[in-house]
Amino acid sequence: MALYNRSRQKPPRQQQRKQRRPLPLQDTPPIDLEVINSHWPPVEDFSRETPEQHEERLAHEHEAKRINDEIDAQIEIEKSERRKRRPDLRIILLGQAESGKSTILRNFQLKYAPTAFHAEEEAWRAVIDLNLIRSVTFLLNLLEEGSVLVPLRRLTDDLRRLRVSLSPLRRIEESLSRFISSDHPRRASGNGFSNNLAALTTERAFEVCVRSGSRWKSFFKGAGGGAAVSRASAQGYEELQNARRVIEACREDIVALWNHPAVRASLAEQSVSLEFQSGFFLDAVDRIAAPGYEPSPADILKARIQTVGVEEYPLRMEIGKAGEYNRSLLWSIIDVGGSRALRAAWLPYFDDVNMLLFIAPVSAFNQTLIEDRSVNRLWDSFLLWKSLCVHKLLKKATFVLLLNKYDLLDAKLRSGIQFRRFVTSYKDRPNKMDSVLHYLKGKFSAIYQQDPENTQPLHVHVTCATDSNSTSIVLARIREVIHTANFKKANLL
Ligand SMILES: Nc1nc2c(ncn2[C@@H]2O[C@H](COP(=O)(O)OP(=O)(O)OP(=O)(O)O)[C@@H](O)[C@H]2O)c(=O)[nH]1
Ligand SMILES: [Mg+2]
Image (tube, rainbow, N blue to C red):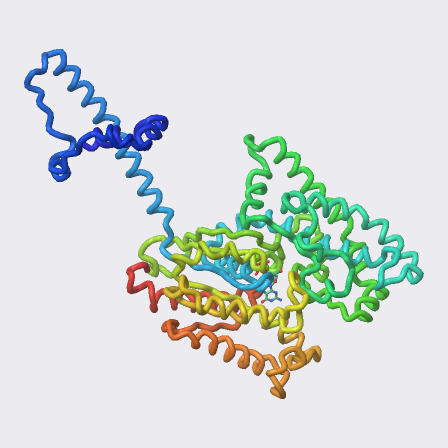
């Protein structure tokens, strides 16, 4: 029966258009409202059929049934595919740029889907190489004529030699950038190597940008070999191998440049701490530029690549204690680009998220936004948090707040930077990490509790996302929250 309806429901496009055109009033055929609830299609009278017509009709019905069964089977396959793809749980990672969202995502992958995590090591090696080269070319730029940090007159012969011997790295930087962020061959926001002090005091001098979280990795999947590798991929792979050879050849000179007393003195004079910058690998050159280098999980967590856009990462749980999972769970983790211009793209993903993980980088109290130099980064985090806490579409989601980068907060406070200088309401509380964290936790929690619709408890954790061991404990607690509080009720776990 359905087949007649279906074939009638799908007339060719032209016909559809014709049918939609309204009939002139006087031509409108009469309607019989009695048939609305009667049989459809209407029962037909075949009593006057000839044997030929009968045969023809049966053949036609047989063929129509075959097509109908085929369509039904296809719909069933699609439904079951969709069911397979639909995650058991959706988590969204939110926070300003460089708060650590993608690093938290990598921790999730490392803990719960290690095979997938390790399969991407080669792609991450290219990012680490690029992060390293950008640090080196940053230092090389200091040696250029007119640099505010190392005036040319102070360049000794050994520095001049290093400038020449390391110059091939500039070309390598170009080719690596091309592969990793083909849309953005140079750094994204012009904040990179200007050697201007405002840029240096941020953590974003070595920015590498990627349009969408995982597409760039697919290049590396096919690049290493196999008959089906395209010519472009093979050529790209060759270039990557070449980049690697140049880095290895430059290893000693990179170490010499980084350890050069004149370079260090100049950086110190200007209070530039490259160690606080994201994607800083200069202190590990010996290991990273060695032949056969394979990135460790810690290296991958330290690598910096800016997310531009929104991407959902399926996370199929691979591990767990025996009997812990009664089936293989599929989580979906949504990672977003955090800078202000990218936040409008978040909204369509709020609808059916089960959990919101907000990442606030507590070390950012003395920094301003790259996108708006007049805004303190900590202030921006609070504004963002406030807007999410009252967001109508997020009322069903469990809120988890991660006070991230406590290691950098600690280092800054220990180096003598006064928290109260940047957050005046902190007044004369101790300039100690625990006290600052306690203060910030209180402020974030108060904002959450201000909205009477936020009835679920807020879960707060202090994290250092580059430390997989401590983060793993936090992730286990988050999983516990998922397990016990909300989703158990819905039989999701
Ligand atoms: N020292 C330290 N570095 C961290 C921590 N968390 C993240 N990072 C580093 O900070 C940099 C930025 O982290 P990302 O995860 O890329 O930041 P994001 O929030 O995804 O940024 P966008 O993609 O621009 O929105 C990376 O180099 C990380 O390795 C932390 O707790 N401590
Ligand atoms: Mg990111």
